[in-house]
Amino acid sequence: MRYELWEMPKTEDVRRIARTGFRETQRLLQTPQARRARIVVATGLIAAAPVIAKHPYVRKTRVFRIVGVAGGAALLVKVAEVIRDWEPRTPASG
Image (cartoon, rainbow, N blue to C red; front, side, top):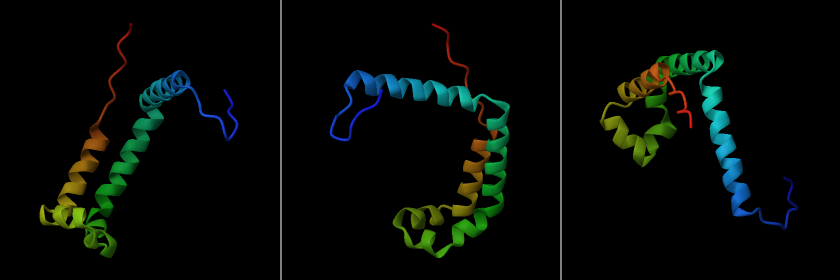
């Protein structure tokens, strides 16, 4: 459905579009290509974790200073491992 710039979409349309997008995202994440992409992203994040943790911008932000105290590089590696090992659940039928 197409809207002009001054028109607001109806709530039902927004819900339908969001549901469709969510379903398509779930379907995409279950493909072999998405699995390979998660592995590549996670591997890159694991390799770059020490550099990311020491980057000046990261060290200046309040959130990342707290993360740095908790071991920023180790935490980034853990997040990358979760991304790498995550497998999407198949949607329940019904």
